[in-house]
Structure formats: structure tokens, C-alpha cells
Image (cartoon, rainbow, N blue to C red):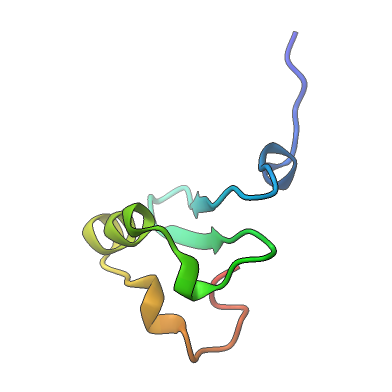
Length: 68
């Protein structure tokens, strides 16, 4: 028997997370509480750029609700 947990419950304090919608589009980027957009690991930037055509660093000066 498995127990369901929320996405946030599955993350440890220093984990990063990507949320993908049912159509395969990037829906959100969750960052650790003590991190900011300057700390995004290169591997996440590469996935966002290569797979979704989105560079998370482009959102540095945007409203914080664009990336979660």
C-alpha cells in the first residue's frame, strides 16, 4: 500500500522541482527557500532551455508568481 504525499512534501529543504502540466509544458519551477534565481543549477537551466524553450534566468526581473 502506498501513501500519497504532496509535491512539496516530497521535497527536501534544498531540493529543486519542476512541475509539468498534462500537455508536457513547464508549469512551474520550485526553488529552495534560501535560494534565488541566481542559484538555479545549470542542469535545470539546460532542461528548461532544451526541452521547453524557456530560460529561467529571463524571469529575474519579473513578478515572483511567474515561477513558483
